[in-house]
Image (cartoon, rainbow, N blue to C red; front, side, top):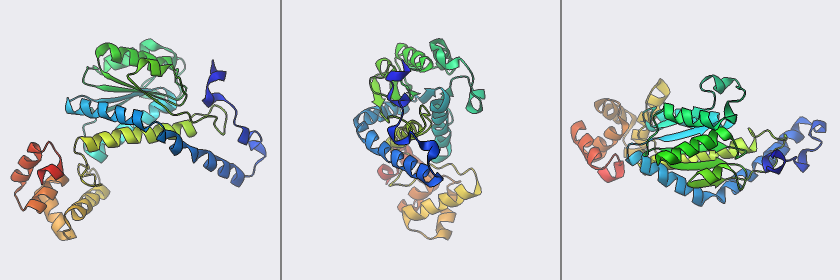
Length: 294
């Protein structure tokens, strides 16, 4: 079956890659990578549909759950983990699951991706509900583990999205929304951590970022719910207040401290000249949207 997958075909541009100079290899890889955004553009309508599902889940107190095996699973975990500091969400709001569990993040574990039951079991383990959206990720589009997960998600009435890098993918049949980014033959035959992995990362970036914007986690183009977990992010928080309100650094620092480190509250306090308590109330009424609160 693999010979029918575009991601498994040999790339005519790299048949003699072992004879290329380092610079020639890099130029060839760069050229191949340039094709990825254009391919994704063709799937924007499907990605929009996926984002709307996730926004609906968030508003219903549900979760975005990524699930995949190998590189696909790791990319889901990467996006999930980075949502916490970027958007100030709970680690439980965006969840990444990989076939084989935590050990599989570093080490390939044989056989786990070949079981539909394992995919079902892993979603049961996180107490999947109908309010969640499950995004199944598989470059090949045929991974049994992901198929099983999507099957179970549909049974539970959850939102289902399939992200693959081949057209007419098997996983697409088990999802309400199918995103098929046909990235084609890799420079290194079958190594889907390359163009396919890049495409998957870009799509996951779009889904999570657009969904977070849709629930008020962004003001303008500023990450106003950033979680300041280190010195760099504390400084970034103050810079965000400066950019949003046009106050100087000292004033931004004062508002930041008065707001107990909550950037959104500090911005509303500054722009509306109100107390912390008033700012919090306005944000609650506005559903967390700074612009609506103003």
